[in-house]
Image (cartoon, rainbow, N blue to C red; front, side, top):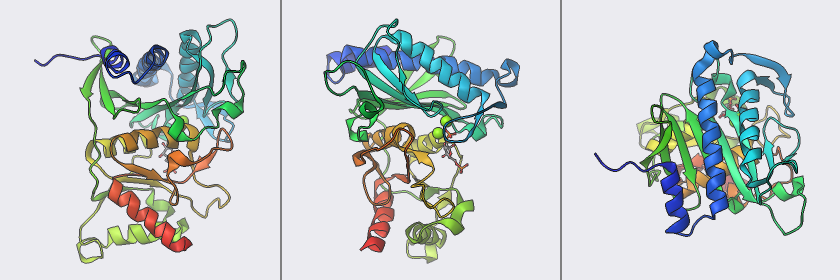
Length: 337
Ligand SMILES: O=P(O)(O)OC[C@H]1O[C@](O)(COP(=O)(O)O)[C@@H](O)[C@@H]1O
Ligand SMILES: [Mg+2]
Ligand SMILES: [Mg+2]
């Protein structure tokens, strides 16, 4: 049997051999990974743990919170405020930033998370996840403000997600490729199971919520129409479609076998750039996808180059196999010209 490499060993290697990450960042990632293990336990309990259904509250974006949205948020905060590596946190489930109180050890990083991604899938027992993004607090000044979080995704020190599916898998980048770790439940440890994740540049599989078709902008409509035309159409090949409605699961499939994922702007709410959130969904996923050789744009620009203007900013997302993302982006740019 080949040697098992744990998350800790992998991170120590990244720190010592490759000089990629400081010790503080390594320890921060381990705290997040531990929190994900605790969330995985709650997810698995389901009805037995009374964690299904609505919490009866709404988050800042007006979405009804599920019990697990609230539980996962609390687990991440509690684990990380004791961690000692953070100045503040921000989450889909909290209106403003959460500054780590003085009674806890202080650090120089900022952590953003979508504690539970794919909330509509919790009660139906379909894969869900946790997405996170790590930034460095800018400047030397003491104190931390929301402004400190508003950095482009290209500044991320690390990003990852944990998928709670048939297997529990942690996917991580510290800017040196993408690694996957599978949770060994008996041992309670994360084991490195894929060290060099690569997204093929071409694909025959797209992921989009087709029920919104009539609301899409012309470039998206054109791309999907061409895919649907199959072998006889301009693409000269048949396409398959998947839509899990958990971004983590759709992105995980793309990291595993390629594909393109789109949640574009649509006419239902024309003033919103998209449904997904830039800081704790699109940015971390775009960092991971690029690190695996894929691409991510909002139709016109690279997502990682976007300058955020607010914590809960939304964005149109097109990511995955590079040649397909470039094609959809070129259709948008042609329309603009
Ligand atoms: O139900 P829709 O409109 O297809 O949206 C699905 C998308 O919404 C999300 O569930 C949003 O995430 P949350 O569950 O964290 O709010 C994505 O994971 C997914 O891609
Ligand atoms: Mg989400
Ligand atoms: Mg969520």
